[in-house]
Image 1: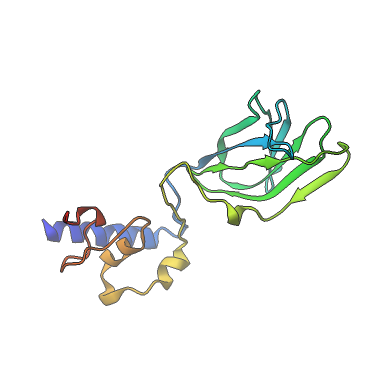
Image 2: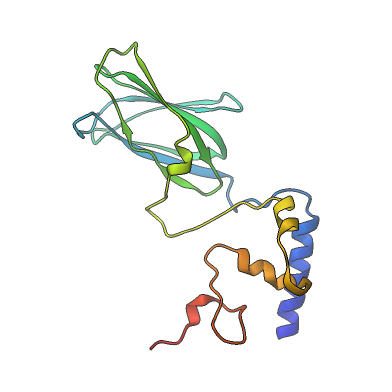
Length: 184
């Protein structure tokens, strides 16, 4: 049984290394949601939103509901910007939104009171986004990154240790999941 698992892991790692591309999440679509607020923290209903793919120029239009909430679902992976316009507020543009596969990003947007001809730009916010609605962790590894990882003893099972959520056990068998620690 143990040899079968190790053989499977070796074959799986070889396929991954020889695939020639980057590893991708199981889904190529994500979701971008959020709430639009005014400076006092009240929600802004019926705001117009434009989601733009920076690379392809594809545009999606949307609006906030009566609770100031907006949602763009089934959004292909890529780099995006969100433009928000509402009567009596300055136009706000949020850039640098990086959406990866199966990601669910939440962007609360705070508008500034002013003429609609004034534009406020927010750049580079994607590094500050932390998903709070899920405990899921994910990462995309390129072929180069996999080649750069040092593997102790050339054991393909060592790649398991770089997966999100992996926790080694404190006994002799370090390749088991961290979920089977004995209760104290």
